[in-house]
Image (cartoon, rainbow, N blue to C red; front, side, top):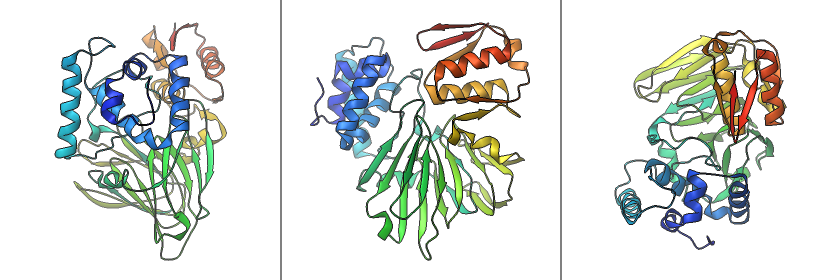
Length: 341
């Protein structure tokens, strides 16, 4: 059984932990959520262990000696030759399919009134383990409102985590580290920056409201009011106007702009998903990220339907049943998989 003294390597060798990562159940999810709540200082180690296990695809849930040797070598290689951030964050409940995903392919969201978004190699994540602070985490389907010591307000979406540096109210540079999605209402402080770190981006805020989403292998920025300046390594900076949405590919770091209705992208704060203007695949992706489920379409023609209205997202089954009604489809549930036909 795991204990608070476990290292990353210990978690990677623990059969109970490996089974949870590869074949999670409601019972194992509850156990590990409780373990992390009781021992928050172990969360970074757990997250890194999940990443290692997922990127080395075992043929069985009980790894062979060769599997463990490969894991151990990879851990030590990363420690001795850290060519990318040592703590590559992953979801707290490993319900998503096991697949190999490079650390630099992780996506993020931002919208702001006075922001400089610097898409880099994720240098801010180097400070993640060395910076002391409090980590907030949300389970699937749960939203948490947080008031920071500097007066800033954060709404943390489901399946997300936020680490806040100690002494936030006294720092010249206020820093947080985000994995998942959050909406920020930043308190203005003269001469004090507010920085949101993600593995792919560093967001410098001068006092505004913005949304950050770390999902689906791209960075999206939606501006509600004011100005946002965006820059990447491969593209000179550009200034966004309210109503602009910037989409950044982590592969080439090119910025694409389009006009949107900003209110469609932060309705999750009130436990709603707005359907207007979104394709069914987009809606399904959002529900999968929120609830940790898999949704499949038996008939590809369903994906062509145009939807309007909104869904309550407080209870997974109710939300998915209501979507089925809108689609005039039957839904079959098998474990955490829902099939629309």
